[in-house]
Image (cartoon, rainbow, N blue to C red; front, side, top):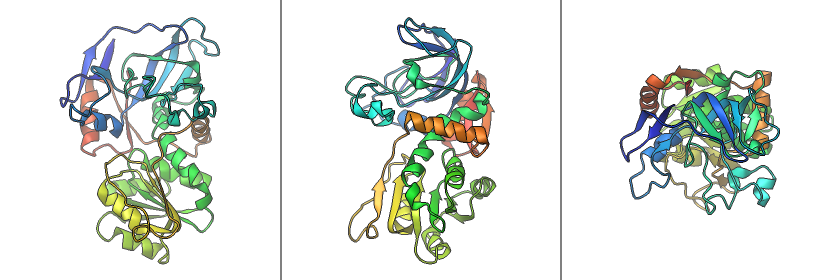
Length: 344
């Protein structure tokens, strides 16, 4: 079968032929219908050899949708031929966090050698993928897998961050979205769908700001040295009650710190490597800083339900295997509007 793999440190992705996997006991094989590209893929491919710990070769792709194709011994509750989305942050399944469906915060996964697909385990950028447990599959039903697959990360990750700050998103509150790319343009929609807050979006690109307005942002600000001052002006000098940084580089983190209101929330979602010093004389009184990771299984179900109502959708650019490497290049250079999806 064809697969998109990272095979050599510093070389980037390649399209290769590999053996079709067989499911073991408790496992499910999916025939992949769509796989999303993510900046997290480039984060690990940009790591130097002494920091890379994901194994080689690695089949990429942690945003996965597919049709159940073959069941291992003991699998129940999964229908061969039915369409599913894959919940990506796999945990041990038995600890306190996993029992609550919060496998994204499993404290035992690393020590047990459990890794998400595409981020350690073989991912879904292939014709077939093995899913380790039925609990990691959510039925898609009539949802289009190509239009929906990115919600498994680009929808779930902002939803988890936004839901945790929902008490700050009351009518009259201001929510600041930094970065209106793959995650941010979904984040704007989620804020509009589950709150009455006023949304301010910031990005370096006029095209991304146009996308922000298309998906519901009330105000847009071009990123730069004056961005925080413009946010303060839009909020009557008070600042944003909740800030969601979907980039995480130092300039956006600095903007977040300078824009947040007293007793506000800053959620650093992007993994751009920036650092935010928190405490007296750095952040406003009462301001909380958090780095949320992915989301829970029940939250993914809620995101898919939002998609079913039409409240949330993803702007998708579609590619085939033959252009997957090109798609990764476009992603790396910030040329993807919304989310890139490979369709086998």
